[in-house]
Image 1 (tube, rainbow, N blue to C red):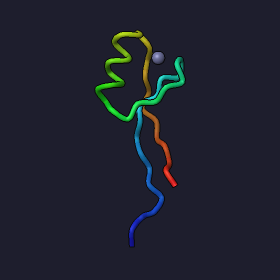
Image 2: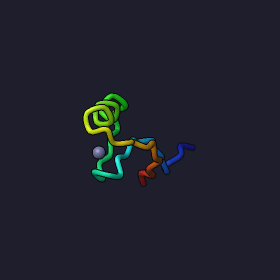
Image 3: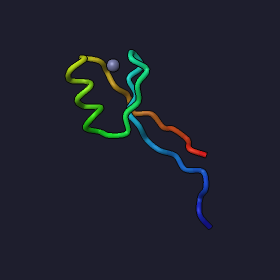
Length: 45
Ligand SMILES: [Zn+2]
């Protein structure tokens, strides 16, 4: 049996309301904007 309810970890900037799937992109955003990005869990149905 496969688990159909997949969850994914993404990076989110709450200031811009942007989400990043890529660790590098999140890191770049953090660096250039000086915003804090948080790793959040998303549930993909
Ligand atoms: Zn931002």
